[in-house]
Image (cartoon, rainbow, N blue to C red; front, side):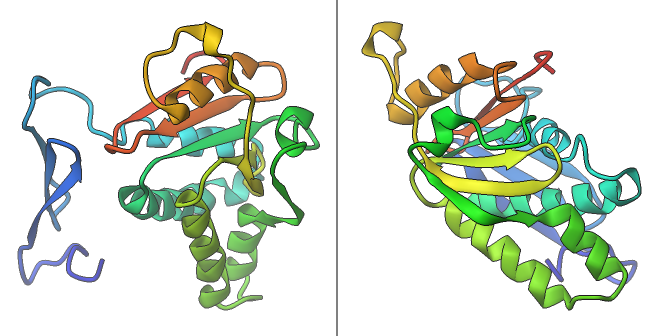
Length: 212
């Protein structure tokens, strides 16, 4: 992170594998290019193409004054964490309470982690940056566990390790995560406002209220 900070004194180019058969070339001056080592065209979307939609859904109802810094923090957090993840599903609810179909079989936090509030407290110097970062590390750990991670659209992490029943009649080709994503996205508009999936090979999918 330090090396990739923009500087007028030196140039840094980072080359890394960000998904199966996909290499990212990134400069500390802001340039970025993806090289696909498969059938994908050169102008194909990058592996984390839906990250902005996910962050937008999570922060949709956060206080306007705190929205941009919250988006900035969560974008940086997810960008790094998802590159280390072996696949995950993240659901966003627009309800006051966690949907019953997820809360019945999952770990719902007694006290949600309110990232928007934490970012506000940090801005007002009420907490140390290490406190906010520690909450980010908890989320990173959850992204490497089984089950669905649940946020609301106010920037709060509600729970993790949630599971849904998957019907074998849906004729979905793929593993358990892909079948779970297909099942849970049918709940969009009925307890959920968005669902994001990252497969084990690093590619992502997203479904939102208006197919944004």
